[in-house]
Length: 390
Image (cartoon, rainbow, N blue to C red; front, side, top):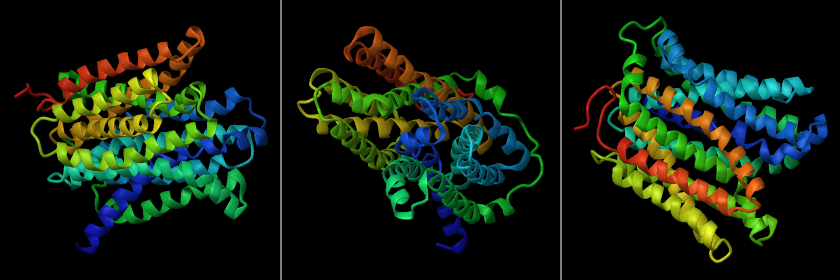
């Protein structure tokens, strides 16, 4: 592998590793943040809510930037803005806490949308492999941040502000590695057809979007409530946290392996359906026998959710013919997906409050998974945006 190719792959992977730590690293520090700046629990939860909402609202900026300055420079700008946001978040004052979080999330939203287009542009013959690599990097980055922020805080003695600022270091390193691609990329506005019109008129777009938003919803519901579900079922509180860690770690392997296999086939329906059914099995285990085999349910759930996430990203790259169209499809699918996902944990909690237990919320989650399977059936069939099914 040449030095240029090595820098390309290294910058690509490290950029993907930066797409979740700024969000996932907040939860372990949240109690300390609330005490330090005087936030209520609602105010503390609002930090993550603001970030997830920004992921949905600001994704459409990415195709506009890519058309103006190119995908390479769009990704570079996202990394630099992310670094600025996490540093700002650690400065004194509640306004900077929320503003920095929002700025970091806007940068992540842009990079989320750009990554499938980057995959299509630089790895057109290895879309399945590189989708697996970068989706597993996303999941691995989230798991690593959740696990390491507290040990890093204790080791350095910096406190939550210093740890937040340290998150700028990997973003800046990724920007440095990606700089050669940005310097070689197209500098001026790009001419040619605008893909949004074709993308928005295609049925394929809405099948892929439905799959993305439903798998995001069922994932964020579990991310928010899984430890509480097991605790209410009679398991110790710390064991609920360990179970969440297990399912997140299992997702890393699933996100790497499944796209590599699925991308070799003309139809991804068997893989999408299999991933959805494994997620259903995890939900059913928690509903019917949460304490009988909780570790088994979490392994099954992790495989299903990790595979579903990676397959949704793979379909974005496979279902559009060129990088500009992939970026437009990614913008639609991911913006709607995260906007819907932000509501999932709130609605799940409301159902728990109204019903007095977890049976009704988990049944609602199974209903969402049924819709996910239906969307996956159509999204997984071989098709291209703007063309009929073969």
